[in-house]
Image (tube, rainbow, N blue to C red):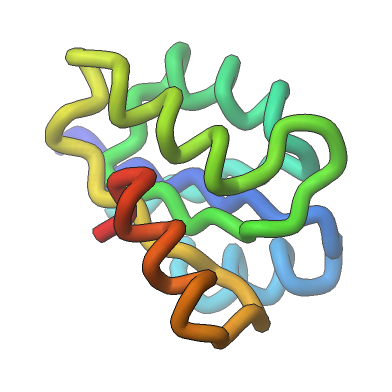
Length: 101
């Protein structure tokens, strides 16, 4: 059985590892990235089913990364959820415009 692939993108290692610990299991493979550029490379290689994406990242931020993933036809079925402490309406709208679920 092919595992469900999850990519967690968070610059805080404690958060990334907590999410990994909660999600990882026999049929769920979790990979983490700490910044946008490496996350984009991993997403293109791994073709995750789900991306949990922080907004604030060093280099390429989460909104820009979301846009790039949505522009890739191979990632059209990938679910992208923002994993962030930002809670303003404008932050939510920016994530939705970028293609987040």
